[in-house]
Length: 119
Image 1 (tube, rainbow, N blue to C red):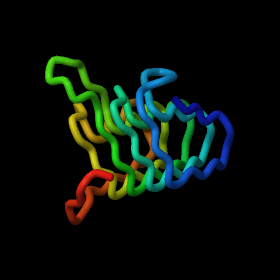
Image 2 (cartoon, one colour):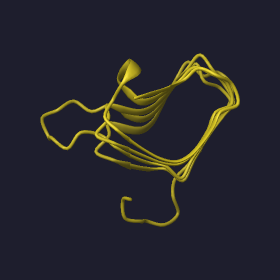
Image 3 (cartoon, rainbow, N blue to C red):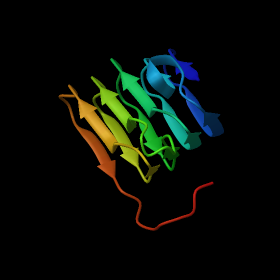
Image 4 (cartoon, one colour):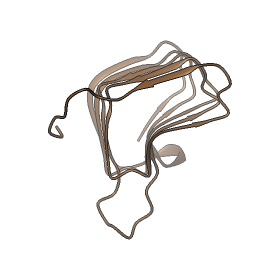
């Protein structure tokens, strides 16, 4: 649905429905993206960051497909995306919340401390 190829992009308070490029609701190739309060629904992967670094993904809601028989992707998929912080995101019906692949430098992730209803 949305591809972020530029560096230093900030996106807040957005709703995305359905998968797009690379089977993701948001596909990130630029460096240092900040995604905050994003609702991604009915997507294969929610956010897919590839060959980029220094992102912050905070307080987002990510849901995959509702059908039980349909294959589901990752809430946040980091492929060669070091120095990324993933905090207080909510994942529903995804294969994994956060999947890290080939990110040799630190990636930090934290789970929400309280439950909330999907937006």
